[in-house]
Amino acid sequence: MIEIKNLLFQPLTFHLAGGGRGLHLNPRERRTLGEDDISPEIDVAAKRGFVSLTPVMPTTPVPEPPREELVNTGADGENNGKRRKRR
Image 1 (cartoon, rainbow, N blue to C red):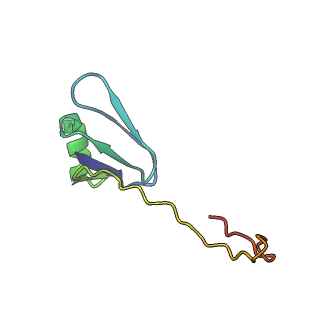
Image 2 (image 1 turned 90 degrees about the vertical axis):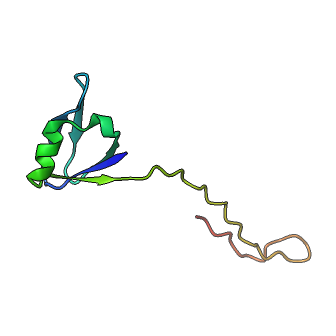
């Protein structure tokens, strides 16, 4: 996988290798492409400093466990006027 980043403050459009597909990058936008999708046009843009190409290792995001907040309750089951924090 390759990360492509638009280094300019204007949008860029490229043809992708193999099959009439295109890539539109907004200003300063990043996208991840397969190595087979990098066309000679993208290579030339990288040499001219319009985009940066960085190899990326695919990672799976680890879900964060939900946070639990303790609520101070009185003996009769009321929360003594304290509110629960929202996140």
